[in-house]
Image 1: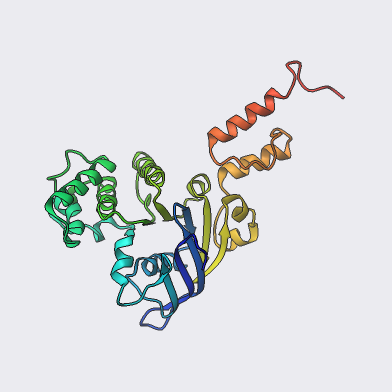
Image 2: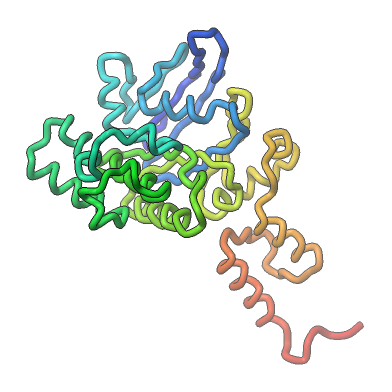
Length: 289
C-alpha cells in the first residue's frame, strides 16, 4: 500500500440482499487533499461506492483501509467519523427541529463538551453562510438552504474526507455557485473531497482527478483531460465532452490557439492563452502568403 494513501479499497465487491451485484473488484487509492469527481450513469454504483467508503455498508468481498489500517466491524465507527457523506436528498439527512439542533446533533453524539459543540456549530454555520438561520426549522427552508444545512452537519463533525453525492442537483445557479465556492474553501483547508456528479463541465474545471464508474466497475481513473480524451469510453458512459474542451479543440483545429496541449480548465485560463497567442502575432497581423 502506498505511503501517502489515506483511503484504499482493495478488490472490493458488493451485493445487496437481493443478490444483485452492484460493485465488482474495485481497486482505488485516495490520497489526502485530492479533489476527485466521480462520474457515471444512474445505477452505475456511485452512491454504493460512497456508502462503502463511509462505513455505512460493508464489502461483500475485499477490504477497505483508512490510514493504513484495515476497517472491520470493530473499528467501523472510526471510518464513519473520518469520512463524512452529504446525501443528494437533504431531507433524508435532516432530522432536528431547528438548524442549530440539527448541526449540533453529530458533535453531541461524539460526547464532546458543550463548549466544543458550540464552537463547532458556530464554525459550520459560518462556513455555509447560514448566520441568522440558527432557530429556523430546517424543513421549511429552500432546497439550497437545506443543502447548506446538510453540508454544515458534516463540517461540524470535522472529517478528513467529504463525500458529496450530487451536491448541485436541483439547485438554481446561485445556490450551485455557493456550493462550488464551499468546495473550494474546504479544499483550501486541505480536506479530501469526492463529488459524484453528472455535470461534466463542473468536473472538468474543478477536479484534479476523475473516476468513471459504469456497471459496477471502475472504468477510468485519471486527470480530466486524459479521461475525457477517451471518447468511446465517455460515450459508453453517457458522458458528453465538456464545453471548454470542445471549444479548445475547435480553436486548435482552426489554428486560433497557439498554446496547444495546455488544456485550459476555466474560461479565465482559456482567455489568458488566447491573449498570449495574440501577443505573439505582430500588430500588422500574420504574413500573407
